[in-house]
Amino acid sequence: MRTFVSLIRRFLRDDRRGASALEFGLIVPVLMLAVGGVTELGGYFQQSGAVEKGLRSAATYAARADLPLSSAALATIEKIARTGETNGSIDVVEGWSDGKAKLTVTVSDVTSGGTTVSVIRLEASLPYTPVVPVIDGLEALRALTISATHEQAHIGG
Image (cartoon, rainbow, N blue to C red; front, side):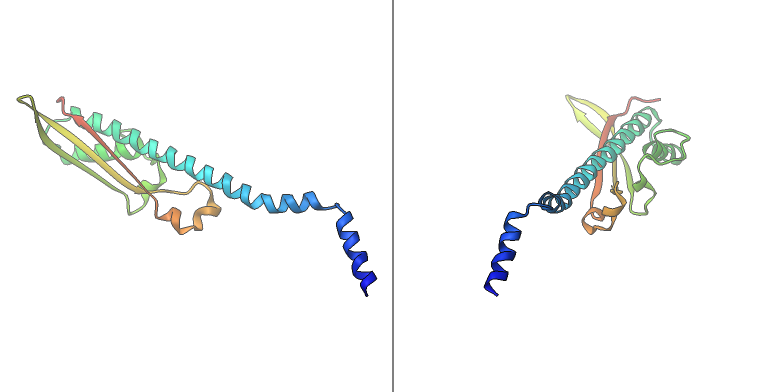
């Protein structure tokens, strides 16, 4: 019995075949998680940038509209924030179509140096849409929210 055990130990100790396959099998899951994480982080930044760009464009439009903002102007502001165009039909970020997305438009007067200026503030909050479908099942990604704010001084129409 002892000879058999020592024979197996010697065989396993001296045989290196398959060692690289084992190492590869141990490293691949870690690498996949890292690549997936970096992809999702990049997707978050891309979607956040798209929301900020849409708010900036909508605030520029709102700054040139007549005050108080009419319901038609508010609808156009929302359309620009969502699609990037006054007559667009495709949302720039998928989270806009979710029922949890919110866009708030407020107008307030700010006084500085004796001059009063109307300032239009747009605030958006929408859920992050995961880039990699496999990671979509993780509840932590479903809880991520993209929030952005933009203010623009009113310059009249």
